[in-house]
Image 1 (cartoon, one colour):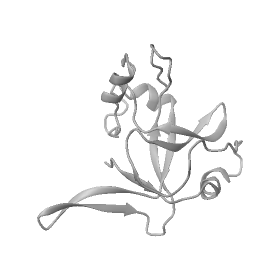
Image 2 (cartoon, helix red, strand yellow):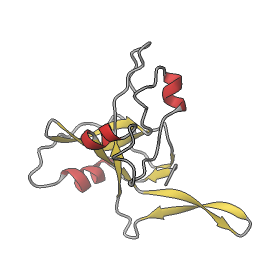
Image 3 (cartoon, rainbow, N blue to C red):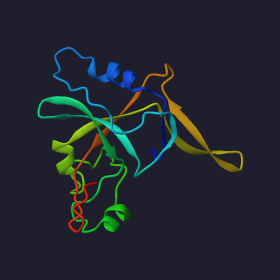
Image 4 (cartoon, one colour):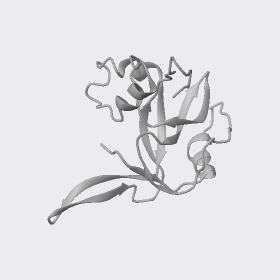
Length: 153
């Protein structure tokens, strides 16, 4: 699965795609990140995540990478952060199961990159929708707080 993605959408396109749905109670919150085109989104970067909290649909800025609950420092959190969960074992793995059952979201991307062989070298290939619409990637999330600095990731 991808370790690099890109986005070219605007905040208006996000709201139209996801929040303009009949029957949902939703919040329009200013995104706390710049939505400028970015062709190198990678783990540890912040991305907008669509989530439901208290029966409200909203975007939140979240860091890409799931911090294990047993991490005792920011160094541990950064070193052992997980960026991909396999569908076949997400329900069983202790690292993911709590987030999978209670904290899900959608990460909007314009596309992502996969590496493939081309002649004698590796080359990134962009994967995107043919109609150029926003891709919806499944996400799970957790809140983690550094016990020393009380900084939240």
